[in-house]
Length: 137
Image 1 (cartoon, rainbow, N blue to C red):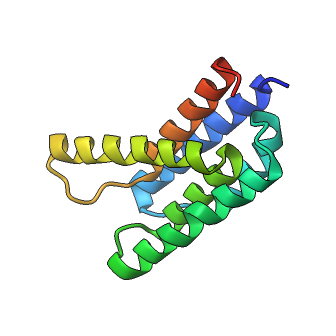
Image 2 (spheres, rainbow, N blue to C red):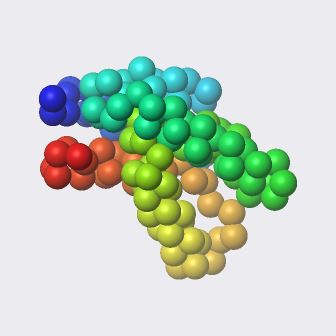
Image 3 (cartoon, rainbow, N blue to C red):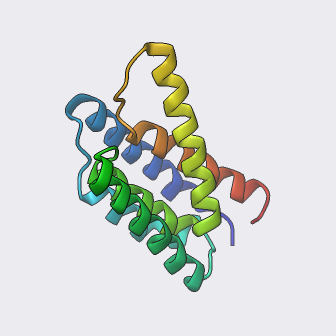
């Protein structure tokens, strides 16, 4: 099928805005995951059962972590779940691992304990979409 470059470009611009909002106000719009889910048929050919597994496989554990440790905001959890829907479970977990690794490294470099996670999630998610297209996954 191939990636729709116009939709991908619009998503990149949209997620840049989401990242900027998270950096400035420490909040993620509830529209962010909805936009990604609506755009998912244009950027990914993941089968429906894997989409459900990705959505629930990220939503449930990350929501539990958010509630128990207050380490994630619920906006981050919903954004991760939307990437799970778009990418499928395994690929979304790989993107999440890359985003968290980058966030930890950035925190070490800048000596900050709490960083906004949306820029890392959006960057890793969009890079993963590009890699999926490049390798026809």
